[in-house]
Length: 73
Image (cartoon, rainbow, N blue to C red):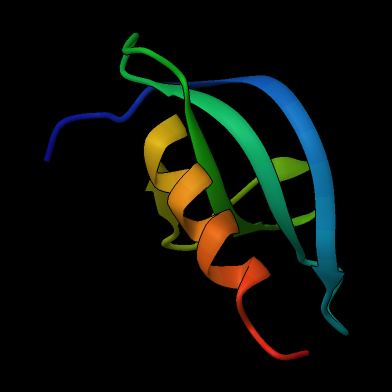
């Protein structure tokens, strides 16, 4: 399997923190030198490891925001 390269171009915020100090974060990340996308995933302390996550384009993030705004919370 080929190596995955990434650059966190902007740290937006932490959504939660686990008992083992992993943090679920929203970041803007460039994967394999591509256009940065919004990314939600868990990171180990010092970003030594990462979990599987989800990446979203600006359009997808806007649609997610619209859907969340409609929730009766």
